[in-house]
Length: 524
Image 1 (cartoon, one colour):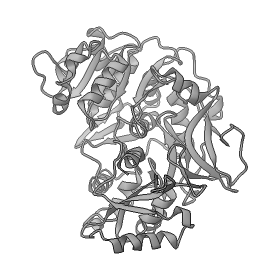
Image 2 (tube, helix red, strand yellow):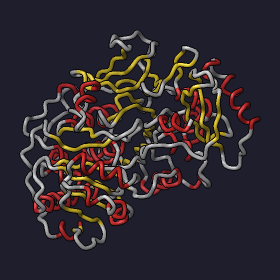
Image 3 (cartoon, rainbow, N blue to C red):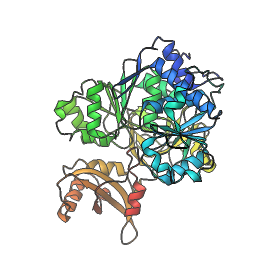
Image 4 (tube, rainbow, N blue to C red):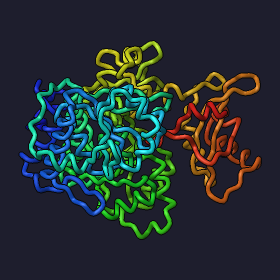
């Protein structure tokens, strides 16, 4: 078992021969947590010892199917125990698993399978109709394993794991071997395969969860973000299990109602969600029936957290929402507010074990208070993007990773999020942060959500435009357009006031809840 407790995160020495899945099991079983609950799913409880055996079974089953070291295994699963077992079992036997969204289209699955050259697909029976139209186009795919009822030509997950041994030695992986991939959520177009190595999650788990957020075996953690994206994989799998905590999986869509029901049922201590969930909780009917008092940390990430939502959570529940900023590329929130040190309106400070610098368009550091792009240095930055050499060269600059986040740092060292480098725009020659304008709009009593972009006016000049989702029962009108413009005008300078306000039924979002502003620009 790797002892990380005696040195700073940046000085942790991971041995050359190292397997992250084996390390997770070793640190729990050798610490006497074999009989401790690792996973809660519906009314099922799974101990760390049971998780080890079940992960070994799917690892051995994959071996029997001819899967070898570095072969890719695609997971198209709802959040369920089999998803955890498959990730851990595949990594332990040396394969490279990658979870993908359950909410996309067949053409996207064809892209994932062909881009990765996955040899095996593990899929929920309910999602098979999404694979049927494209299966014949995936020449590298050899086996389809079904969680549920298999059809002719498919393998049953339950059957192949029941026939496999619960004992398995780990593959002789190197710390710098590929461990797992994540496909980005596609805020700007085609998803990219992010390659993570076996040593990466030592640093993220220890830095963010154990050191910064004080995660421990006593925590019960739930992430509204699903396992198929970085926020979910990190929290529900790596962080929780690394520290010996209990992780809660919920297969249903993460609505605000499901979120509060999950907190109440499992007495969560650690909850993670996007701002849209936290905003929705405030409108849950009969909210007073649910007990949220067990929560010691409520992490908000994925998009900017509007100040009114932060204030209302603190007023009603006595809970400070801990806003952070991170990415699947680095696989943690590299900026994070933490309990007792939260500064609303910021994404916190750079977490222990990582370094950050804010630079201008020439790569030169900017002084405090000045906006620039955030670069991050840390051992979990992506090794490379699969099949995307030019993107890798533009993004990974030696030891530094270009986050694409535009930010500034205040006098207290807290980071203020401005927007994505490709989302911020100039209006009247001055930079506009979509997140800032959106934060003002959602503070209006008639607005549920807002997405802000720059659109050309009749003269071709870029002006601020807002796409607004109204509260149920509120009718769009020209009078309301002017009311919203006046509302923003009272709080922001003139060039940030929307010249156009368009009412829409919903905002285009990625599976992880991020606004796809490029689609709003296309709609405009």
